[in-house]
Length: 133
Image (cartoon, rainbow, N blue to C red; front, side, top):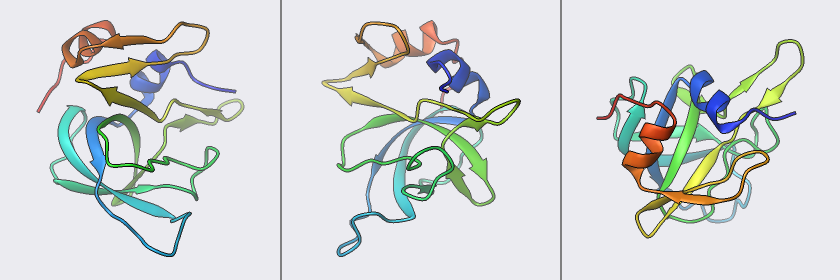
C-alpha cells in the first residue's frame, strides 16, 4: 500500500530540495547515501549534508538516488539520519520518496494522477508547504 503525495508530505518530518553528493565506488547498494541540503521546505534540518537510508530502508529500498540531479525528498527522522516516510497503522503504507526537478520544475507523479511539472513555488502552494529556508 502507498501513501498519496499529500499524505506523504503531511506525515514527513522534513521535505527538502537536495542532491546526492557521495560517490561510493565498489558498492552499488549502499545502506546510506549523503545528500546536500539545498533548501528546506518543511522541518528543522540545519545541516548542509545529511545521511539518508538507501538500499536498507523499511519501504522497499529506502531512498535511492543514482545521479546528482536535484530532487524534492520527503523524509522521516531516524536518530541522526533520515529514512523514507511510512506509517504502520493498521498496515504498513510507504510514502512517495523523491520527485525529480527537471529544468527548474518539480516533476509531480502521484497515485492515479497524470504527471505534471510545477515550479517550486507552485509545488509548495499546491501541497500547503509554507515554511522555506
